[in-house]
Amino acid sequence: MSQLTNAIRSLGSRFWSRSQTSQRQTQPFHAGTPDRKPGRDAYADQRALVRSDGPTVIFDVGANVGNTVQRYRELFPDGIIHAFEPDPATFARLEARFHGDSRVHPTRAVVSDFTGTKRFHVNGDPATSSLLPRPRSGRRYYNRRGVTVAEIDVPSTSLDDFCLAHRIDHIEVLKLDVQGGELLTLEGATRLLSRTAVTLIYSEVEFIALYEGQPLFHDICRFLEGFQYSLYGIYDLVIAANGQLRFANAVFIPPRVREESLDRFEPEPY
Image: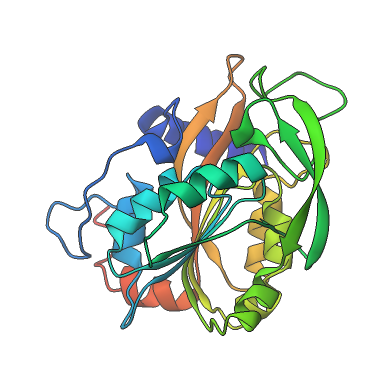
């Protein structure tokens, strides 16, 4: 793991940003654009890697107030976006923001490993609210406003159940930003993943525990490898004041996308 961490840190010298991906600005482009520099911008890479004959189906899991929904709305104008947010107050803002937009479908639910009800930790910084509590010990690697101020019960759905109920056969983009709950979300999507019915997964990943019992980057990689998904790129590394790599965003793709979009390039020139 030390070699992996060192390699990822070396990427940080080129790509590290104190802000998350949703705050960056990118213009859409298509695969094959001469000035494309793959691996530099997560949204531009998603636009290049995702090809669809019909409307692009996008799941924004952990949509918050809709900043990434807006990004996907601009990036894929023909897209159908299912946006999930469990916190009632945050969901109200999300729903109001896209009221009247027939291509955005907000759902107030946490997306997890089963359909039912889950206990949800509401934090002082709403963007950090999670199914998981904060760590009980160790150095604090999260912002001071990110402490739990309330616990509530919220509706829960699995991706497999939601897609079955809504007759959705394929997801082009699955975006996950669920504050340590990423593995739970993926565990509720095993039917989709076993068919590689998700073209691309764009997920926040952590390298140090920000929540009690949460999976780390290598846990997500190991789980997805079981379904033949592999890492394409890591973006927007965030590093703590003591030098510890905290979290980043990652793109994972199945073999079909790798073969169609990447293997056609000439071998490396060195």
